[in-house]
Image 1: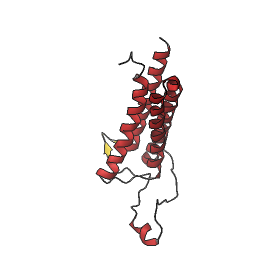
Image 2 (image 1 turned 45 degrees about the horizontal axis):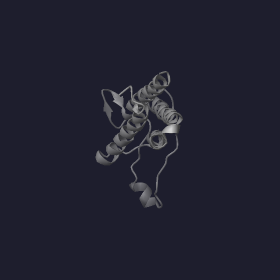
Image 3 (image 1 turned 180 degrees about the vertical axis):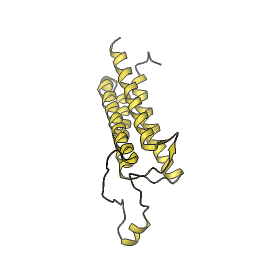
Image 4 (image 1 turned 90 degrees about the horizontal axis):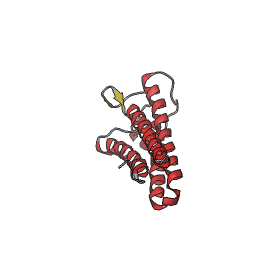
Length: 153
């Protein structure tokens, strides 16, 4: 697998797909409503997925697209670090309330209030934001390693 030129693009596609998919499953399958910072972490994963698809479609441009995908995944991890720090109380997070598509007071009252500084669910003592940080930063590091290893051959 490491010898394949597809190793880095494959990880650049699979890592954000699994993390974004896990976020959607936790939201729609288990009712864990995302806060504003949870949404912030999803955007870079979406961009990384598209960049990785571009790397598969255009092999001549694969390396820069894979590196951009790794950077996007790393950005999601950095946002995850910030979000986990807010949850732990290391620093203050955003202080505004948001709603998505609510158009009336009744709609606003139906939208669940999800605070960015409260952990909804944790595994092994780490919140989903912390897990996103760990897995995103690790995934980005793996992609950078694979891209550097392949170019050094």
